Image (cartoon, rainbow, N blue to C red; front, side, top):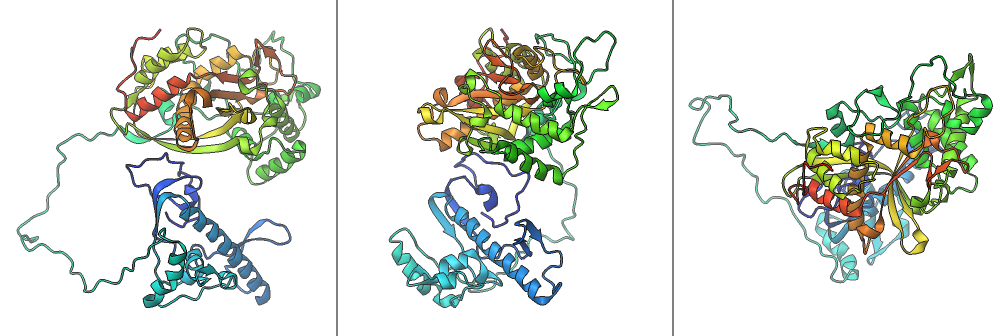
Length: 556
């Protein structure tokens, strides 16, 4: 476990895997557990930048002078000291994470080096009196270190206090220098260099996969925000509804145009589509406390902070040459409406408003192994397995038939990475709670500049959008990631009890408590009841534990 606090944007939560050595930063290791953990670099000081929270504003501040005497030495010293104290406590928190990841054994290395007397490891090991933490020495800028020859004796009281749980070993310098190896059988003169030839074919199927990487094989795109590209491709057997998106206006369109009053009733309807607004909405929803006492104030604060550092064009649609309301106000209203929209029976009748922080994991990153135990899965075998488990009236069955016919022509080996927008725990107080994979979508399914017609965010329209963008595959892969996470972390985990399917929230159709409901399904809320047995078998298929689904290539 390293000591870097910088979060690697490519780092993902890695499933428990006892057959592999995993190297990661402490920052990424938060929340994980492993049988044995090695901490080889905690003796090294992490971070020397002057970075601190300003006392007057509370904002995280970086000293661009690098600790120079500006505007005077006293002020510079104050900044440096404040940064040192914050760095000390942050490194202690990171050390706590590193030293508590192991289930069976933690191995910690210590050596003396420049700056090691200011590290968290030095404080934990040597800021002690008779084996107990000495609070005065613990908070000093630097810890008094023992001589190397005395280190074991100084640590002995700590070892004694730990009973038989702690042991120490001294590794000294090599007793003699080591000679570099050199060949005595050949020289450059009698062994000329030549180009090596590779006489076997390499398996290049193993790589780092994602949902987007898979779907791009068919020219499909998923920016998570809208009907990207409005491609004319159709999934065989899909529900053939008219497509809207950003289609141009045409004569005879009798749809109700947007007005200021109408925009207030359906705030998201007038907002632009695209990657920028989609990313903004996802970032805001990740940070929002849905159960905040004053939700409007919460949205105001988070929205202001997110908009402050990114460029997002929130200008709403224009109708008859005039804009419909203020974009930021419409976004605020749209977020509030979505959070207050009842999610239907599949979610226990609750709205996002009812989800406490303890009942949600936001932007849960994952990385799972593919084909680790056998042959890689393909889109055909995945599709055949899905078809085998779905009922005849499942809205995703036509899409699954197309997948079983070889939609993407991929062999999935290596690793699968992704990030789940929200994992929601439903029914936490009932004793029969379940976990639902939730994905936010800002797709526009209605015509631009018009109010949505009835049904444009109904279940049939959402099923079409799901099929067109291959969201069922995303839901399946993310459900497998959740399944592997829960079977590792949740005592008594039972897929049949704890897996609650996937919910895709098309936010533009969620207009609050008055959201239309048809046959028990609220507009804008698409819940897919993925059979738990399908998730379990798909996990095994992706891992190579089963060769292929029964009946592969025989769509129903």
